[in-house]
Amino acid sequence: MSESLAVNNLNVSILSNKDAASNSLNQTIDMAPPFQIQVAPHIEALQPYKPGRPPTELMQELGIDRLVNLASNENSFAPPLTVQQAIADATMNLNRYPDAGGLLLKTKLADMYDLKPENVCLGAGSESILGSIIRAFLHEDEEILTSQGTFIGLYVLVSAKGAKLNTVPLNDYSFDLDAILKAVNARTKIIYLCNPNNPSGTIFTRDQFEKFIAKVPQNILVIVDEAYHEFAESTPDFPSTVGYKLPNVLTLRTFSKAYAMAGIRVGYGFGHENVISYINRVKLPFEPNILAQAAGLAALDDTVFPEITQENNRQGIQYLTSAFSDLGLKFVPSHANFILIEMGSEAAAQDLTEKLLYKGIAIRHLKAFGLETCVRVTIGIPEENTKLVDALKMILAV
Ligand SMILES: Cc1ncc(COP(=O)(O)O)c(C=O)c1O
Image (cartoon, rainbow, N blue to C red; front, side, top):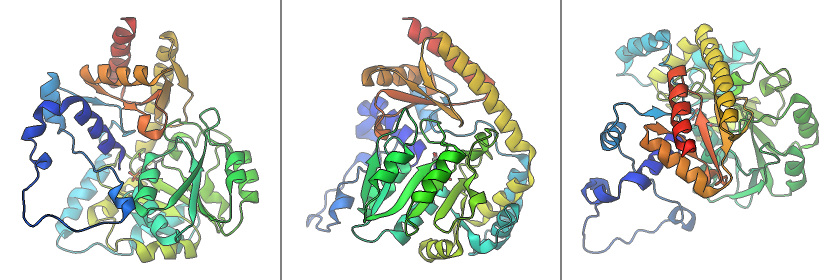
């Protein structure tokens, strides 16, 4: 489940009851004989996706003309103009299948890190690559080991596979690499790390990573999800893991965040050529699509846009954390484009999320992440951040 789908779920749970009967997707069809096709128990146990209201309908219901979406860690800027132009140009070729190997984009990414195209994989978002990794590497009875309170998309992909997830608690909202090492057992096949971590925004340092990776058995694949790395690269001890070139480490990255391209779906990964080759055997052949590949190529030529995004993020974090402190809110210092706020109780977290939504601001209650007392707000552009602070002042003053 993507983050925005989860937000839609929230909208539905708050707003959809009275209209449920009119939602054609909620209607079932009476058929005889009865439906008899069965699925595996782990698929049966998955929660079906509840479609949310389109933003326009939601805004009508709330009586607002604009919804400020700070719930999904998206970039509030429109994508670079060069990317928009590249997509427009590539529409001329939509009658053709994309280059299944994505060679131009792989080569460009490989050149940036002195690697070969064989060390690069592509997908329709990094979440799709994560799905391919799970399909390719996890045998029956093998486990994936990670932390509680990390990227929800991983938990969903693992459940969909029916695989066993082994988790250790976060330590002060951070990945506890020592606890992860202690939890390694004979069934551990994959370790998933997220740096900076979504949803807490914390990082583990270069020193912590190096000590950790030296002790991980070589037959375990370590995924380092660096979806938000652009926001942390200026932190001196942030371990940019592509540089290590280790055979059992796969680094995942995306154009969705710093490049503002979440809607086109293009992500990438760097790793040993054998790891990449196994991923390529199970991935859908023609992802990313032809527009996404063109967009990725254009984005890499644009060095200014990510810098503008990073500067907006730095200023946004400064402004919001100072306002949160003034309001007496407890938050976790962030190295990403979002901030986790500890509300003290599930009721307070839920209440704040709902009250902000009714003021036209969507944030994320982190119950589904296992952090039921917390919410997460994405850093927006200045006018969005100001709107959030003004709304918080009104809500918390009551
Ligand atoms: C940690 C993390 N990894 C991966 C993703 C998915 O990124 P993509 O849009 O490339 O699938 C997200 C999206 O929010 C994320 O937070």
